[in-house]
Length: 145
Image (tube, rainbow, N blue to C red):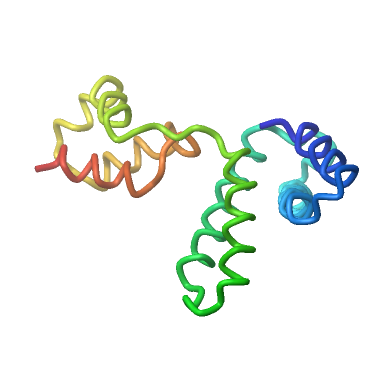
């Protein structure tokens, strides 16, 4: 996801007077700007950074939905709307089968060791931002059996 695309979509939401959408995108934009400043790339925000922050925000909103009391339907609706908007911008994640195929093809020599820690250490940098960490962990656990 390009940072400029997010900014344009935020302006579009403002013009359409879609407050919920504007707020969701605005929170993403500010989180990305903050991360860019922290990493020292304020002027040149890379797509990888944008995707990483989107996934982080998506996870945060998912946790808010899960921890929200059932009787607070107003909050649940707000969190769900935010989740839906952020999810539109989230990069497509690899499925469990795709992760397994990727690991078996690229890391066959490491898999042979059956050392889960060593496999995870090799695999995570390659798959970071492309697949969910839980899915990767499951697949590596199965391959180590």
